[in-house]
Each structure stands twice: as C-alpha cells, then as structure tokens.
Amino acid sequence: MPSSQELLTIISIQTDIAKLGPRLDDVMNRVVEQTLQLVRADGVAIELAEDGDMVYRAAAGTAKAHIGLRLKMDASMSGLCVRSGEALRCDDAETDPRADREACRRVGLRAMIVMPLRFKDETVGVLKAMASRPGHFSDQDVELLQLLSELVGAAMYFATHDESGDIYYKATHDHLTGLANRALFMDRLRLNMGQRLSSGQAVGILMIDMDGLKHVNDTFGHRTGDAVIQEFASRSRACARASDTVARLGGDEFAVILNPVDVPGGIDAAVDRIQSALEPPFDFEGHTHSLAASIGSAQSPCDGHEIDELLELADQRMYAEKRERKKKHEVGTVH
Image (cartoon, rainbow, N blue to C red; front, side):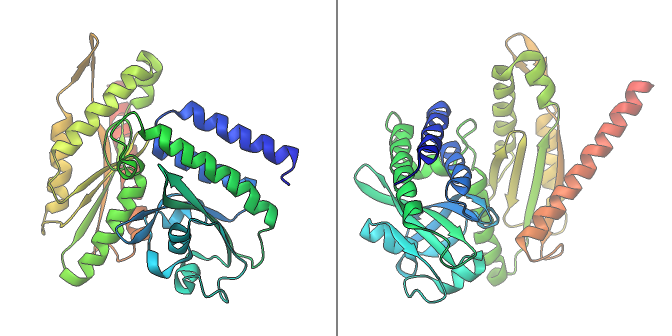
C-alpha cells in the first residue's frame, strides 16, 4: 500500500490540478513534473493516441527532449496499453518483447510503467514513467500511478466537458491564444524536418521573445498582460502562411516554423513581416501599449540538420538580438 506521505503527495497534485482549471496542456505538464518525484522516475510522458501513433504531448525529465515524438501504436507498449486498457510494467526493455526496443534506446529507458488514461469510457492515451536502470519500478509504484492516472482522466474530462470536448485540440493548443503549444510545435517540427529530407526544401525556425511583458504585468496587472499576449499572438498568426506553424511555447515565448523557407531571403522577409505587424500601438482599457519582440532564426540545411542544434542556434540569435535592442534603448535614453 502507498505510504501516508505518498498519499498526501497525490492529494497535493490533485489540489494543484484543481487550481489550474480547464487548461488541459497545463494540467498534463503539471502531472508529468510531479510524477518524476512520486516514483523517482528519470523521465515521464503523457502520450495520446492519434491517427495510429502514440504522441508525446507532455513530458518531463529525460523525456522532455523528446516531446512531440511519435511511436507506432501497433509496435509499442504504449499502444498495447491503449488497446488492452490495462496497466503494464516493463522491467527491461532490452528483453521484453512488448517494448519497441529501438524507440526505448532512443529515449534512453530500460524500465517503464505504462498506465492507461481513460476519457469518456475510452482509453485515449497513457501516463508513462521511465527509468534508465532495469528493474527500477516496484508494485507500489504501479499502485501510485494507478491513482494518478485516474486523476488525470478526470482532469481531462473536466477540462473539456463544457466546451467542444475535443481533447486533442486542447492538449495541443495554448489555452490563452489558441496557437499551437510546445508539444504540437515540436511534433510539427519533427514532421517538417523529416519531409525536408525527402523534398530537399529548406525549413526555418523563428524563436520570438516578447519585449516588455513583465513591465505590463507589473504596472497594469495580468488581465492587461493577457490581452497584450493575445494581441501579439493574433498579429503574429496573421503574418503566417497556411503551411507555417505559429506557437506559444509559454509565458512570453513564441516560435514559428517556416515550411518551406523561400530561398534566398525567406527568413528575413518573415521576420520583417512580424516586426511590421507589431509596430502599431495596442489600446486596451484606456491605455496604449507598445508591442515589440526580439527574434532569432535558423534554417535547415544551411544552419544544421538536427532539431536541437537549430533550436539552440535560433535561441542564441534571439538573445543576441534582445541584448542589442536593450543596448540601443539604453543609449537612446541617455541621449
């Protein structure tokens, strides 16, 4: 049986989830983060069943780098869990025939617990705890995750039952702006990068950081801050083509996948469109607010072929741009 402390932890997680309300992506992210400590896992993911695949829609720990990863339902333990509706435990992925050995090696796991997540009498996904050491998990860990998976299923229901009921949309889109969230951004990026290899077309990434959001929140309150975020998102989305993906990664962080990049000059043109769209001031409740952003970019293949290196490069260029903008502002203020 779970200990008193472990049960208190479950109750604490339940309280946290209740405070989040109908924000499914936030609920799932909170669950995977809390599960890490609960069963001493190296990585945790919530995978949803979509079009014959199991897709990492929330992840923490070592699994976080693989958010958006797709596994074949008919060749993975996650898919077996969805089909059977039963909790599964694997002590060693190298010897367990139910596990997708190559996928487990890619993620770096040897042991796992896979719990079904039920929504409206249907198993729609799994809560998966992972460890790099064989035999890491115990029967008690299975019991704890059983309690937690029931909680997640209930949260999924209450997060969607008053609206469209589309669990997949709510799990992949930011609740405030309606843009793609981090999980969908990474899913699309992996897909677009894979298509680039076969088509030869360039794929671009823009990493975007809103300037001045903290000042708005501190001065006018979070209601105004949310309105500024929504306006920023709306203008950014209006600049995008149908083939592009505009995402809110969290807080004041946004990103765009340009698929394909028009060569030459496609990246610069996209940045110019966004900056031009942000120039007009935004009026809200009697106050005028300036919208501005620091934008960094990278594109494949000329800047690299790996997703991680492209994201890191775009991030570095974004922060360099932010430092330069801050320096210009300080010089202008002095003069």
